[in-house]
Image 1 (cartoon, rainbow, N blue to C red):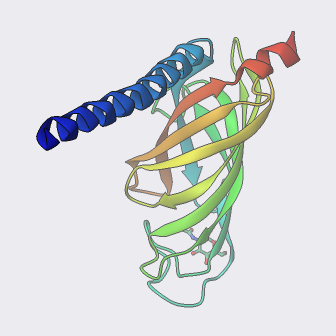
Image 2 (cartoon, rainbow, N blue to C red):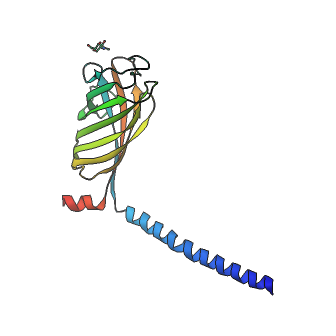
Image 3 (cartoon, rainbow, N blue to C red):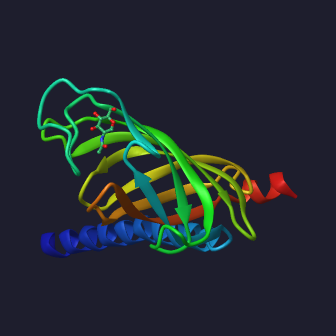
Length: 190
Ligand SMILES: *[C@@H]1O[C@H](CO)[C@@H](O)[C@H](O)[C@H]1NC(C)=O
């Protein structure tokens, strides 16, 4: 008798748990479905940086390794205005510029905090994106997109920056854009 009472309450608990889980499941799938209405855009460009031509050390850092192809002393303030092209070759079509600065933030001189405004003039999309985040001089890094202007008004997402060629005075990074417009962005532009 006691056992069956026990198993009855156990059933009740299981039923309650199932009831509680189910609404959560349906809410998240509804959320997913809702996300299908979000406009997104994925493409890649190549950023070209030439030391003392498009990228400069503005303030020398205070400690850590010296200035090299891949390291800057801790605290170095670096400013850049780099062309962005459609292909790895620097003489391929320029469709934008990345203007910004970075401050070396790791004592090994390899990481920095970067802020940048990327102005793009592509066939179907013109405007700017603002990005901010930590970057690594020799490894890929993701930077959150914090907003934009023009066709990129209210845009969200991230860009992945990966070194392509770090040898020589001109270095090249591949920038992969993963952009998402929230529903209210399309309402604002129409
Ligand atoms: C860039 O300019 C600075 C300051 O004039 C100079 O010290 C440095 O050697 C230059 N770097 C290169 C790679 O030419």
